[in-house]
Image (cartoon, rainbow, N blue to C red; front, side, top):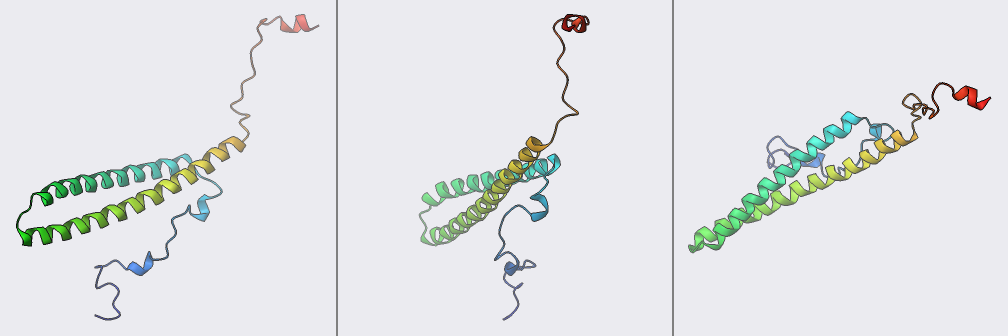
Length: 138
């Protein structure tokens, strides 16, 4: 159907992500909490595992494709390899974007810790002389 953007991608509208810039959300640029970092770490773990699974599938395909002798099988197997490479490219793009955002958020978080006054955690050093330290000073 002409004009129907959903026809080629099911329920996904590709125009939504065409100009999407993967950067830290403006609301997170001033203050990043520990749980935000933990959440993006879990997202990175998920994406990394997805890339590894697709790479393993691609390597299996590559060895099977090299063993194909039938011309028809080789043609459709080559299409399959083309699509697997596209999946690898897309997953890597997503992983790299999340990885870049993780490091930006981590920098913001560590900078905010560095700038905070940690007076409540500061402990006065103990005297080596014991309780009679005041007598020695007088």
